Length: 155
Ligand SMILES: [Fe+2]
Image (cartoon, rainbow, N blue to C red; front, side, top):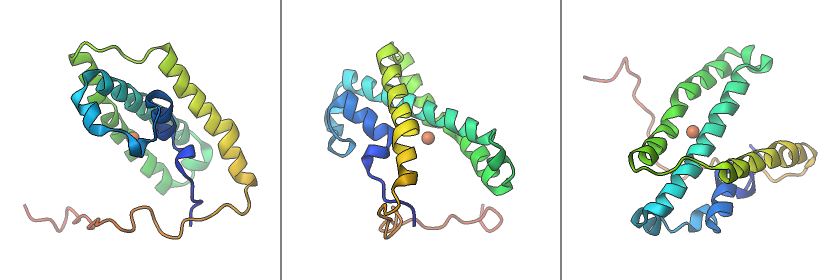
């Protein structure tokens, strides 16, 4: 099973904590929906995080180890196509509502969180031999019916 990592390893979790001053789970979503100022801040956090993810996928797609694994490469190709849909709606809302795009401070936080993960936290995982493992998959309690293959789906 994968290592049981908590929110300290989540890019958006850290971003929310730094920019909103609370954990992602304690974010007051009703207050954010009710306030364009809070919503615009959340849009920028999501957009920066998703664009960071897209950059990482592009790096992985170009990595020799990923390139030699056809199945893994195909998975990342699909993620690469899908990923812009994760930030374009937020950028669109910002543009349509004449809200600013991320500034230097927000881009700096994004870089800091990424650097922290890349150069401190992820290397430490390789030294943490007794790291706790998940006992079940994250979606174990959820109802996720298997999609019907297109060849069997009725029109
Ligand atoms: Fe994404």
